[in-house]
Length: 258
Length: 258
Image 1 (spheres, rainbow over the protein chains, first blue to last red):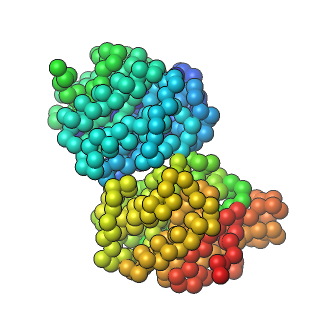
Image 2 (image 1 turned 45 degrees about the horizontal axis):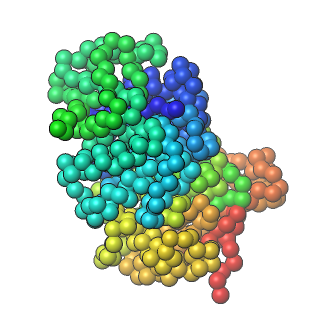
Image 3 (image 1 turned 60 degrees about the horizontal axis):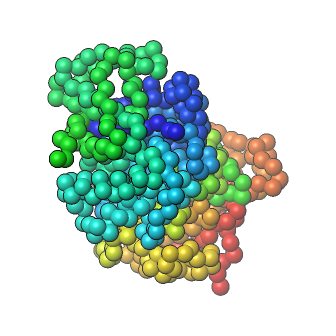
């Protein structure tokens, strides 16, 4: 199994603190050795860093920890291969374009007998079940909504339905973003925290590092961090329910659909 | 105007030497200050690094110069903005997927009144004429060949025709690769060199650096470097003719079509 990390903010924020802890799980505090990746939205553009080396040994991961890239939507992944060989084309996150926007996707879990018909609009480059699921998701969104991007509410409803159908094939913890919102779906394990005023000092679980966010933020800032397992020892992480799809906008989850 | 750099090899090779000289043109020996980018194929996967900072000031460019990523197909670009604001989504190279392969594209030049009808299969995320041309190229390739990738000869013929039609709108120096071949088209300025046995020492034009390739290669290695202006002072660079589309495979240009 792999691990996922996402961040969604109301102002561009760097992810150095959270990524520092998360990257330790790529070979030191946990055994996710089969590559890693991270994607940052910057406006409509995306920076994607992927590496098939373990995150703890990767010079690219070292750069991310030192170079504070500010972003409102970040998705990261460390991989422990279950399907697909260890190769660059199988590293998450994956990026495709739909409706003139980039979409970023990462998945933790395993899908069984998931072989949907792909019409050619999106075709996997690598050999993972994850990229296949991502291609299917985008294909189906385009079939439903045509050439124009829908509003967030119908998009969310369509995703909930599609993701639920795919999740019937196995474990489908995922993060997805188009640079407007961050969608997170939990099959088995995902939790989140919202950091906002008054900010506190947070201490990483995976490394002996603490940060006093009050020193680095303004009272307006709000940041949601979503991750497979809590990154800090002294914050309140909220667990997702199995089957739950949450939508994060401007650093907080939208109210649940009823 | 921007500058382009491409590399095509018969074995995975690092581009540190050529990129070191090229990056100097991003702010030191020339004034291409409006961002830069580089894409490396690794098997079917692509590593893409883009930055809207000048290449000489970019920590990411510094990483590339220190971390020898080995690749058989590399495309790099330094930007001097003519159309489209300075933003990450306007940095070349651009990447899209077609026929289950990634395609990488970079352009130097300026297209006037180029507003093709896009059917939605590929839509620009940014605002450059370049990304518009790339989307149009992939759309037309898919329309001609359907869902299956053609052989190299018909692909080359189709590209020659499409690129010629786009080039009628202005200056269209470009590099394009699907990880199998590297296509380079010259409207105004492009040249190449093939490095092969017996290897010599090459000296950069833009920085006081020389490399004795004989120390770093085997007699089997062959590398083609394609660039807007020669990178070295003591090698024989062959200029493209205006309107010429060359196809590089395994480190050398294929014979011209007659």
